Image (tube, rainbow, N blue to C red; front, side):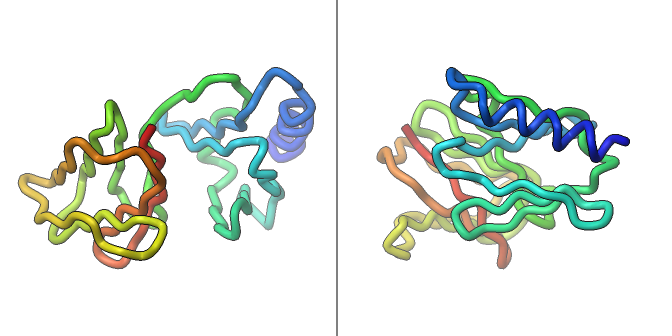
Length: 148
């Protein structure tokens, strides 16, 4: 029943003209969002809620999804990294990576590492990052972030 409700909610959300993003809110309060203009493909596979967008696939256990909705403004600038407890936060051209150990790299869309640092007390920070799209790489994992 939850699966049908989520898909019905998404169908209604995507046809809402004033809304520009789809938001998936988890039971723990974390949120993931996708721009409607990026044409995310949303489906279920078994007990997983699957979002395919910009050639990236993200899967979420249906039992962990609290709600799905559309909105006109960003709900959060915190991006959970895939298969990890690390979180990436973007605010005022600053990037903070939390719950991480070891080396953290900031890579531009040309694949060039523009900054690198070691996490201290589980946190890594990059200040005054130029506007653009980046990958934050931590121990073999990547998270795409947009700095405005």
